[in-house]
Structures are given as structure tokens and as C-alpha cells.
Length: 181
Image (cartoon, rainbow, N blue to C red):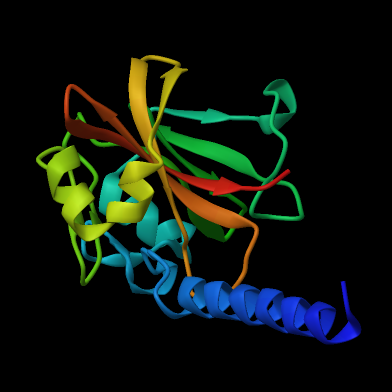
């Protein structure tokens, strides 16, 4: 192949990569972390005392040393505050979302785009997040069995975290805040 043709091929390849990257970054499907509130009252990272005031005394407190985990929001010692099948990581002063069971109806996550509660259907999510919905995967998870899972970004910036939304029989049953190991 002549030098001219090689340069054209390289240029076209580079232009295609740039165009695809630009499309991906200009319209990612995001459920923005900073805009979501627990029961429309508290940010996802909040004071532990405020979370306790909102949800009451936890059903149990778990020591993560006895649990196989690969990543945590906090770099220092923490515990899990558990209400039913929902859990939050907590230090002495702060708490952050970890996993929310929506079937109980006690906790919802409210964003400007959508209220994530037990009434949300997969069809509703598919309309808001069509690309993520097309990439849905079937999984088996504890206490829920076979579910359909979709992944969403938490921000428009590149990050090592995300949302996992789990659906059973077409209804949203759980939302996990996921952090890469």
C-alpha cells in the first residue's frame, strides 16, 4: 500500500475513533450521584446521625472483617448499618449508600430524572436508559434469585464506580452502589 493510502487509512481510523469517543462522552446514560437523595431528604453521603434520624435504629450492625468484600467507599474502619436487606457503610460520623432493597418500601432514591422505588418497571428504565437496558444481563443474587441487571454511570466523568439496578418480574427490586475492586 502506498504511503498516501496508509496516511488516509490512519487518518480515517483516527477520525472514527475520535467520533465514537465524542458520541460516547456527549450522551452517556448517567444517574448522577450528586443529585440523588435518600427518601428525598439526605444526600447519598451524609452524617451518620442524620441517617439514623431518618431511618431509625438499624436492625443490625455488621463488621466487614467478617464479610468477603473487595472495595469500600471509606479508606478507614467502617461498619455496615443494616435495615432489612438495605445497607449503608458507616464510620463514626459518616454514612454512605451501599445496597438498597426496594421491595420493603422503606427506602427510595430520588433524583431529578426518576424516583427509584418498588413501583419502577424495567420498561420505564428502558425509556430513560435505552443503551444500558439493551446491555442488561441475567444474574443470580442472594435473597432475590434470578434477576435482570443493568449498569449506569454515576457521573459524566470517568470513574471506578457505578449503579447496578436489579429487576425481578419486570419490577425494580434493588439498587447497589458499586465500586471497582
